Image 1 (cartoon, rainbow, N blue to C red):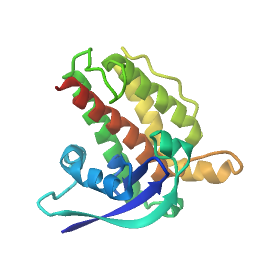
Image 2 (image 1 turned 30 degrees about the vertical axis):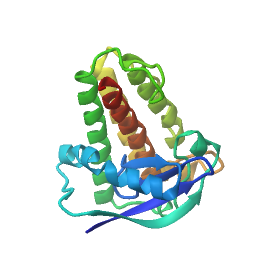
Image 3 (image 1 turned 90 degrees about the horizontal axis):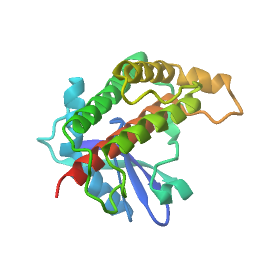
Image 4 (image 1 turned 45 degrees about the vertical axis):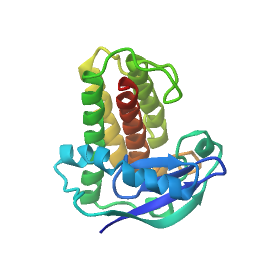
Length: 220
């Protein structure tokens, strides 16, 4: 059985189960058990991320989410997005761990791009993502990342959706900013800043959540 260090973010309406060491592998449910069950169920879908990064992710073993921390959620949690920083994220990762985390984030972008490339513009309407079609979702992800940049001390603008090089440059800037996020956080005391581990996980979650949304809504 493969133990996966997981923390829970708990609100009255929604609970998020977040894998601590695998950025982007985050799922929610109405209860703690429901969130943990969803996390386990999504292991095969998440496997595409470490595969793209060339990192071993052995699914031949049964996944056991081992809860290492519980955090009280807030209105953002209840609305549908993780927002709380676990205590271990305040520790600065080694250079090797930074490389690993950022490699996984890059793979999340790769998975997202691959899903977008093979998906139709029109997506099935319904509660999973509402009425946004493919292009609007891509625009939303890019705009959100420009917004996140301010939380790691950058000031990025939304890249042009039709400019692949601008998108690539935008992502490179985010990666560079993430490497310096803990330094920036110490420098900018008194301002809201995300630590490196949390910022990487939060950005990866948003990318993958929308990649999986597109997959779910393009299929009957």
